Image (cartoon, rainbow, N blue to C red; front, side, top):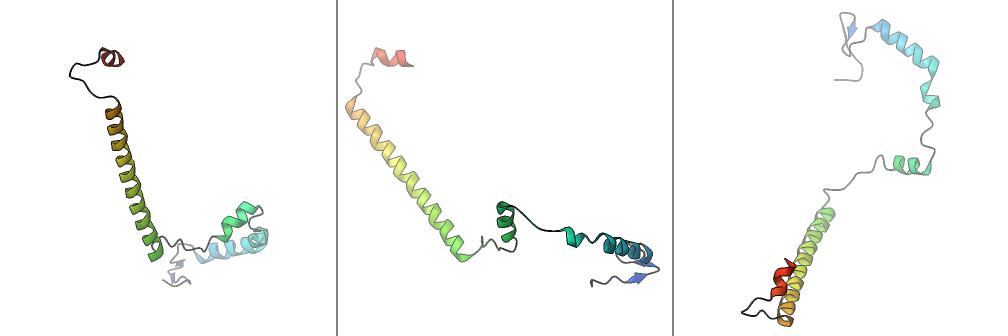
Length: 110
């Protein structure tokens, strides 16, 4: 559909009759809202407005590779953590060997 609306039996395709469109145009010319729109005034607002046309790039090849590398790094850290917990458990078992007769203090801790 083109920007200009087509007239169909006195009503435009956008739903406004020509008379209403004319009155609205007059009101806008009198109010001149484009003169009052000054944009952001704070640093935060200006910084945010500066990013309006920024494309996020979330689907870029570099971002996909980075996400993949981070996932591999995360898996590696989990594996290292699990190995450390296993070695810590074996160290504790070697320091405190289990006996055939249970320690009565153990049951008190439960």
